[in-house]
Structure formats: structure tokens, C-alpha cells
Amino acid sequence: MKRWIGLLLVMACAAAHAADGDDPMLPPASLVLQAVSATPEVHRAEAWVAAADAQARMRAVGSHEAQVTVIPQRRRVQGDRDYNEWELDVARPVRLPGKARLDREIGAAGQQAARLLLEDAHHAAARRLLAAWSQWQRARAEHEQLRQLVEIARRDRDTVARRVQLGDAAERERLATESALAQAQAALLRAQSTLTGAELAWRSEFPSVPLPERTADGTYAPPALDGDDGAWVQLIVTRSHEIGASEALARQKDAEARRARADRVADPTLGIRMLNDLGGRERAYGVVLGIPLGGSYRRAAALKADADTLAAEADLATVRRDIGRDARMVVAAARAGHAIWESRREALQVTSASAAKAARAYALGEAGIAELLAARRAEQEAMLAERQSAIDALEAVTRVQVDAHTIWHRHDDHDEPSDAAGPPALPDSGG
Image (cartoon, rainbow, N blue to C red; front, side, top):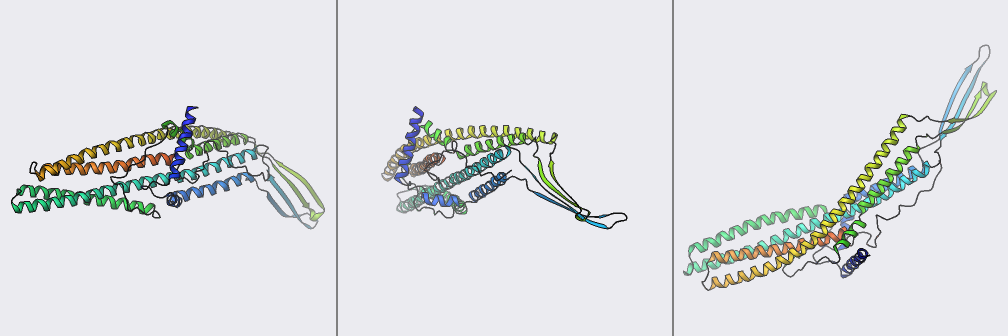
């Protein structure tokens, strides 16, 4: 009962988050869904759904088709005239009772698996989008921070150069500022290369979603993960389309194994036969019954199908294990990410205060340029670490919400894929 209460609280928090609107540091949900739907992986999954639908129709009608055999012949009788004769056979294999039902069950399980795999393709694309978006945000934050560092280093260099001219500073101080500026410029070039790579990666995969002008700054506070950790894990596992698809595939393999065992008794062939001999002077009508005799091949096919069922059940257990493990890991990462950001913010406050003191001490002549540069470098590093940890924390929380299908999901009303019933069976068209 306690777990279910926690689950309800998590769902309520997720609904409240959706009602509040998109986080300003995330792309709009409408653009995300459009971009995700346009990925080739989703298009491929849509093709799998169409193929599964066609396969289900094929199984519903059965592969048995009528065959018409016509044998024209000419009879030559010694001492008599020649006669035109013919033979006509019309035959069709017939599925034994129970096989059509199994075929429909196999087709329906395949349809459900394909549809759930389509939803999982959407989910995987949403996770790739989040990762690429966060990578760009981190690269942009680093670039902006280093650009500011270059500006500060340039001002320091100019200030010290004027003091050297006035005799208030030594030449070695000017050289130190020149070195600091050169190092900052080199770091900025490296950051620019990283940012360009992140932009190219983003535009190549999600060109329809524009990159924002704003990035995380000192005023942005990433959201914390609301609710109970166990409830989030349960929600992720319950709504996992991958688990639902694996369950459907396991059911399909089980039905295929039962179908293979049933097929050890082969389907009979029924037909009619008409003969026209001696130019029509003799006619015959009959019924044809053909019964294949199953042997070692059908027995081996049934054994293989049983082995495939065991493999599918093992695959399902593996998927459940992996999804549960990953769910616990992403929830733990979200908790840790927010705690790390809070620690980074506290460290930034302390480092900024220290840098301010170093600046005042240098202005009063109580500290050298080396102490000032070291304090400012520490401040910039702390500021960059705080901004990037804020992006990390946002990504971790959003990853939990994406995995739980509370955002960036086509069916936010929510179906529960693990418990969902399969699609309706196709009507039996004979056999």
C-alpha cells in the first residue's frame, strides 16, 4: 500500500510539472515530439508495425490455397479411333481445428510487440535528443565562461601594462598577465571546437529544433526530483515499452511452439476429381483426401520452437533486470546530480568571495598579481563547474521523467504497456 501511495504521489508531481509548462532550459515539448517522430529509427519502427499487421492478416487467412490441376490427354485405341480425354483436380489443404486460433494468437502478439517497439523507438529518440541537447548546453556554457575569462584576462593585461608604464608594477607581472591571457585564449579555441562539434551533431540529427539563445547562468536553479525514489523506479518499470514488447514476443514464441506441436499432425488436403475418358463416353467423379505423414522433421521443428520459447523467456528476464537496474541508476543519478549542484553553488560563493578579497588586496598592494590570477582562475573554474553541474542535474531529472513517460511521450494519458491487452484478433476467414 505504501508503494502505491508513493506511486500516486509521483504521478501527481509529474502532472503538476507538466501543468507548470516546459523548463526554460529544455526545448519545447511540441518541437521535441515532432523531431522524435521524424527520426529514421521511428520510421523504421513504423514500417515494422505495418509488416506485423500484414503478417497477422497472413496468419489469419492461412497459407493454404486451392490448387487446380488439369491433365489433358489423348487416348489411342488399337483398331479404333483416337479420343480426347481430360482430368481435373481441385484440392485445398485445410487447417485442423485449433491451428487457426493459434495463428491468430501469434499474429496478434506480433502486432502488439511491433506497436510497443514503435513506442520504445520514440522513447530512445527522446533520450538521444536529451543527451545531445545537454551536451550542447555544456559546451555552450564552457564557451561562454571561457569567453568571459578571456575578457577578464585582457583587462588584467591592459591594467598591468599601464601600471608597468607608470612604474607601479614590475615587468614580470605584465608577463604573467600575458601568459594568463594566452592560456585563456587557447582554452577558448578548444571550447569553440567542442561547441561547433556539438552544434553539428545536433543539427544533423534534430534539425527541426532550434538551439536556444539562453544557457544556464548563475541565476538558474535546476529542479529537484519530487516524490519517492522507489515509486519513480516502479513507474519507469511499469511503463517500460521494452518490457511490454519482450512480454509480447515471449507470448508469440510460446504460441509458435504450441503451433509447431500441433503441426506434428499435418493438415489434410481435400479436393474433388473429375475424369472425362473416351471422348466423354466415360465420366468419373471422386473425392481426394491427402494426409501427409509427419516424421522427424516436424518433431525437430517442434523442439526448436520450444527452445525458442525458452530463449524468449530468458530475454524477457534479462530486459526486466536491465530496465530495473537502469531505473534505479537514473533515479539515483538525479538525486546525486542535484546534491552536487548545491555543493558546487556553495563552493562558487566561497570562491567568489575569495576572488573579491584578492582583487582588493592587489589594488591596495597587499598581494601580487600571481595571487590575483590564481584567485580569478579558481573563481572561473568554480563558476563553470556550477553551471555545468546545473545542466547535469537538469539532464538527470529530465531523464527520469522521460523514462517514466511523464514528458516527451506521445501518450501522456498513459497506457500501461506491461499490462495492456493485445490488439483484437482478426476474424477467421476459413481454414
